[in-house]
Length: 512
Image: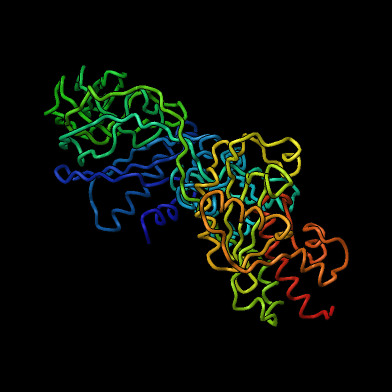
């Protein structure tokens, strides 16, 4: 049984939120210090002498049963958080670890509530993302990360917006604005504390004042070595890089000497460190974790404002899973037109209704294999012009949505790569989408794809399907979910499913 499990067992799970932060062993005096991280609310209100003694007794018993007879000391490190912090960290974690799924989740889709010590995070998703989250255990991964980082037992609740009827406002699939890098030119870095710092050092004037793993460089001044009330050495100093100044502090666990003995005022250094409290609870001093001496080229400092430029970043396809697709696949087993084949459904949202002149503002592609949608591709496109209000009222896309999106000429190669040589499917494609595709390819100097082209509107007409033949009506007729109609990502997925339904319908209805 692991240490934490033993501790929970001995304390009847009353302190499950405690996390082992570190263990320090001093063989010379046979002492051991266990550092726990715990929520600040617990440390400030519930960490009584009685509680400390209970935890201490449990820790001592664990080590004694393992044959460790050292003197035991316990320290507690407060972990600060609030609703805004947890929401922000969840979004950062998703973007970092599940970018293919989460590149389009706006921050407002994550709602965090903290009440009576209980933390709940509600993540609101459209139906196609909801299924991906559920089937890939993403919610559990988020829970494990937050629990470990913030000593909580967070509850993650996924909300399917398809069940609530709410809309989902996508953010651009790619961030396009270049932010100028304000970094020092640093040379000859040599480790003095920890490993050699090889990160880029921000100008102090441009460096963040919150967060962790912050790297800055400058000239040391006011270097002072002090001792804490408990007798531990620590160092304070100021870094000045001519753009600004930063107060720095380095704690030690030594009562005999400091750790920066070779450092002196006037030295040029590059440091890594953390501001221990992201939300303003703590000090404004940078807590140094690594430090290297170096040479800084102060003459190369450039604080001028950047010129706004578009930089294209490839748009990732997003895996897709939907239980409806599984049912559709089962019903299509007898259709040789579907099984064993790959198709790509296409949909454009544009600035107008004339395919000869309108500009693309959103591209949606859905790949279907054996009658099942497996992944999709979606991105806004900057048309380099104002989107007419009449168009925005139809699809809900405005100038603000596309201002940081890629230009068409940048994203078009990725579109054609996703399509490959698969047959294309579009609803009214021969009267609209395929015309636009051919035109924009020629405008960008690219040969239009020669793939087989299928039009589900013409199919429905030829099969004499009952009722109206617009996409929404046909989806309703065949029981296909269409949330956020007139958005490319939703329409292309629905069109792919519609084609499979029409092929199945064709195999069971002889309309001559």
